Image 1 (cartoon, rainbow, N blue to C red):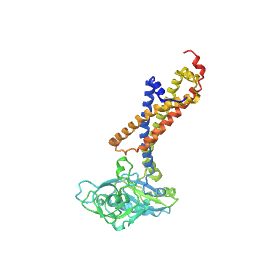
Image 2: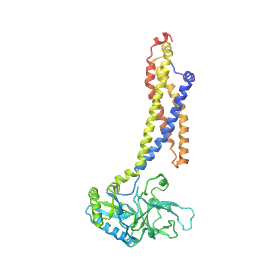
Image 3: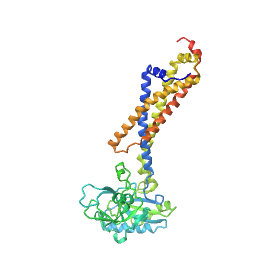
Image 4: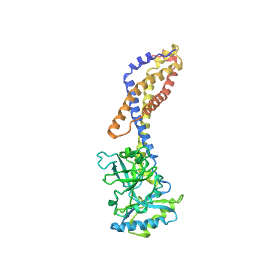
Amino acid sequence: MSLQIKPILVALRRHKAGTLLIALQIALTLAIVCNALFIIHQRLANLSQRSGVDEADVFVITNQWAVDKSTQQIDAQVQADMAALRQLPSVRDAAPASGYPLAGVGSDNFVTLTPDQVKPTTDSAVYVGDEHLLDTLGLRLIAGRNFRSDEVLMTSTQQAVFPPVVIVSKTLADRLFPGGSALGKSFYAMSATPTTIIGIVDSLHRQGTSQWNKPYAGQSLIWPGRPDDSRGIYYIVRARPGQLASAMRAAPKALFAQDRMRIIDPKDGLLDYAQIRHRAYDSDRGMAILMGIISAVLLAITAAGIVGLTSFWVGQRRKQIGVRRALGATRNNILHYFLTENLLIGLAGVIVGAVLAIGINLWMVTRFEMDRMSLLYVGVGILALLLLGQGAVFAPALRASRVSPVEATRSV
C-alpha cells in the first residue's frame, strides 16, 4: 500500500493543538540550541588562544610592599630582587612587569599614525618591562631587536609612558602597517611624541580576556621601563625546562631573604600559567558548560514531548490502525505512516526555528556585539532536530505497527 501525504495532513488537521505544540517546541529548541552551540564554539575557541608565553615554564609573583617606599627605594629593591631571582639554579630569567598576558592589571592606549589624528587607528594593550621581559615570557622575536639596557627608563612608571622606542606584536604591526613594513616606522599612543618600532614579536596576548578586547585581540606593545609602582609589582619568572616546581618554591624564599617587608599572598600571589589560563577563561568554560546543559535539557524535553504525543495518538487510533491492517496495510506501512507524520511536523518546526535562530543571533549581534552565526550551525541544528524527532517517534510508531487487525472488530 503506497503511503500518501494528503491523508496524513488531514489527520494532523484533526489534532491541531498537539501538532502546533510539538512544532513550536521544535522551533524554539532549534532557535536556542543553534545559538547555544555557536556560543559554546566561541567560548571553547577562546580557551585555546595563544598567549605567546612559554606557559610550561613561566610563573608570576604578585609582590606587594608591606611598608611605604619612595620611588628610588622601590627601584633599588626591584633591581636587587631581580638579581636574586636570576641567580637561582632553577631560574632561567626574571623580569618586573606592569602586567602579563591573559590576566594581571594592565593598561591600554589608543594608537594613531599621526599626532593630530582625531579617530584612533586602533587600540593596543600596553606592557612595561626591561630588556629581560622578552626572554622571561618566552616571546619569539621575528623582526628587529630587543631593548638595550640603556633604553630602559629607570624612573617612575608615570614618566615612562611615552618612550622613543617600542616592541610590538605582529598583529599590531600588521594592523598599523600592512604588508610587513612596520619595522622602523613610528606611531603615536595618545601623545604628541612618536615612538619607533624596533622589534616585532610573533604573538603577545592582551591582559585580560573580556569580550570588549575581541576586536583588538593580539594587539599589544611593550615599552622599555622598570615598573616601580608603590602598590606592588608583578615579577615574572621563567624556570629552566622541567624545573618549574623547584623555581616556584625557591623564588619566594629568595625574595623574602632580600626584604621581609613584602606581601606575597599564598593563594593568589604565586601562580603558574596553567592556573592563570584556567582562571582567565573560567567564565568562558562556565558559559560553555551552562549552554551545553541548557541544550541537552531542551533536546530531552523535545524528545519526550514527541514520544508522549505520538504514544497518545497511537492509543487513540488503535481501532483505525486495526482497520487499516485488516484492509491490507503491513506493519511497515503503519511504521512509515507515523515516521512521515512526525517528519512533516518536524519540517514545519525547523522552518520556523531557523528563522527564529537567525533573528535571535542578529539581536545578540546588535545588543551584545557578538559575531554573526554561520548558517552551518542552523543546518546542523535542523539535521539534529529531524533525526532526534525520528528517533523519538520510532518506539511508539513500532508499537503502532504491532496493532493486530483484530482491533478493528472491537467496539469503541
